[in-house]
Length: 312
Image 1 (spheres, rainbow, N blue to C red):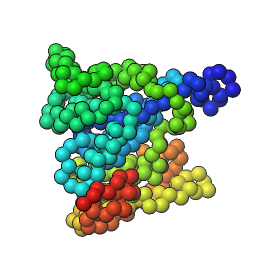
Image 2 (cartoon, rainbow, N blue to C red):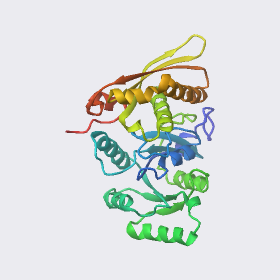
Image 3 (cartoon, helix red, strand yellow):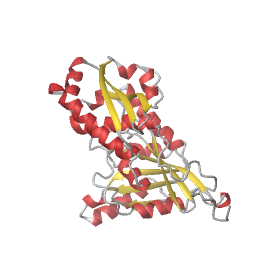
Image 4 (cartoon, rainbow, N blue to C red):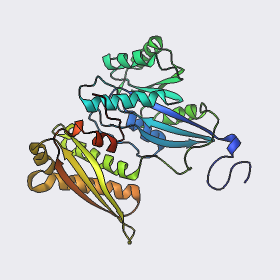
């Protein structure tokens, strides 16, 4: 092996740096879009609806000798349901386990009550922290943007404040290089070509859940969850995937199926198309809809989503 590493793409052990970066913020601040942009591939579902990320998803990016492991956490908000509580607990757990915390703030919304609440709790997290003002493309008044950056720093001391647009990619490269330079020395945790540590079964379920969000808008998604129940590698190189969509009531099942089964058919087509692109092979996807009352109180459903069931 040369001093620059071997042929698996890793730097020499003495040069390697690796760390975990928790990406936190209020719902819809653009955390998932930012993580996908930093990784350079889709590892977390994105929707214009809030609270779409339910479990911390790890995205992996390599920059020079550094491996950056991004933890895209659920949005931080005041929980009303048991599922909400589990999501918020998972988000703060991800923040406390990281080497650096990145707080993403929607620059157009500024320091609203949700962000203020996060800043208050973040005072107790004794880790290096960055503030990222996202969606700066939506602010035409740059004086307001500079004032917001000053207000954020006065509210809580950050090591640095970045102004970016995760959607356009503006400022993302600078942020990635900055983070790479602050990773602690240590071996890479993942192979050089890995983009996420999420199991494929979970990633497939998340893709289908995203398509439900896109198709059903405000009608249903928070009352549903998706589980991959079967994953079969076929001899022809394709994969057969079976998934169950759990809803809480018969009326919700009817909405999910749609007239003549059209809604579930469209969700299946959308999900299968994206899964085939991600897996780079044909996918045979079969979706089933089941009514399970009070699924949000079932500990097994939480474990399937990678969450700890909240204590009663």
